[in-house]
Image (cartoon, rainbow, N blue to C red; front, top):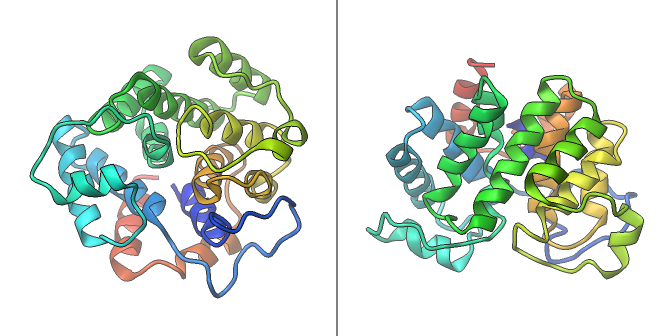
Length: 256
């Protein structure tokens, strides 16, 4: 899940101050982790606890309450702090930003998609919210299984109906901040498809503007599976995490 964490931290300073170029410093003193990182860690813990519906609910609420100021959407933030355990029909991109561990935990493509559905549906149970998580998890599983980009592109387009044929140069001029899966997940996947290595994928995602940290978290989660992550990028990103988040990351790494 370090790919998602790196994307989140790098994108944190550009979410509300978009930069539409690939020429920018990856890390700066003002970078920070956001809800993307916190909820990705929460997904990992839920899977290690059993991966059942209650595990995801308990983990999202636990981590959300541990980090109440991480930048959650209003509806998710309200759900986290409430006693309510029912989903609220969201199609926001939060389901996709946190799904990376599902693509790694799974032992088959079908399981990657099933686990993604379980992780999404406890809050983002709208079909588009579930679809965004499943498409991201599927791309991660296919990438870590050694499938090439054309295979990944064809599968996601045919299974999930996303148009992945636009180029970044075509998307960038009119792309605006958008928190839906429909307008985040396809763009994030395209940023991966046009990349040549992990760092390039992150730069592609950030250069689109929009919801930069979440775009880069989704792109980074797929790029990690395809390319791996340079040690220096991993170590730098981990330096922005506190001990609690790092401990859970290390526990997850013992599995992989």
